[in-house]
Amino acid sequence: MSICYVDSPVGRLAIEADHDAVTSVRWSNGESARDSSTTPVLEEAVRQLERYFAGKLKRFDLPLAARGTDFQKSVWNMMCEIPFGGTATYGGMAIALSSGPRAVGMACGRNPIPIIVPCHRVLGSGGKEGGFSGGQGLPTKRQLLALEGVVLL
Image (cartoon, rainbow, N blue to C red; front, side):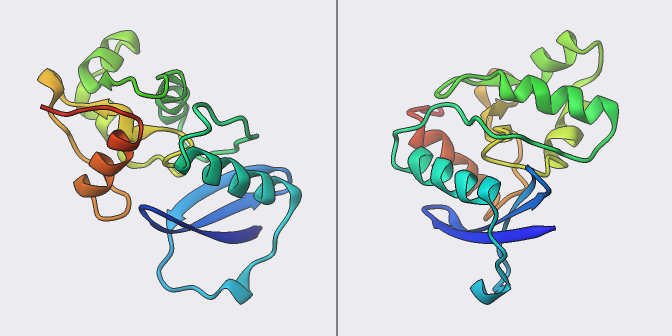
């Protein structure tokens, strides 16, 4: 496993990869940059994240290898189809997956590659925020949505 760090508007992020695919993006808990071991895929992930936060990238194009159940992976794949500046709802995704909104919400909360796999774009019914397990929780979700031009009511 390789890891590198990037400072972002939503906090310091740790990006992890196995071989040639990103496996995790998480908020760093004070790890040192000297623990980094960069690889070409990590360098590209950092480049794309920097472009995203600068408003110059609307869709990530990285090899991903998220670990999870088949259902979780189907939710994560569906999240990747939500366009920049767009949103979906837990309920709408649940209908499309013949599941329930809580199951979709649980899969969103277990997304190991937030931001790149945009779980922040999934909202509750009526445009309610729902939850967010990364960074500082809902303030981070609001910040990511605002960066994409999404205004919550």
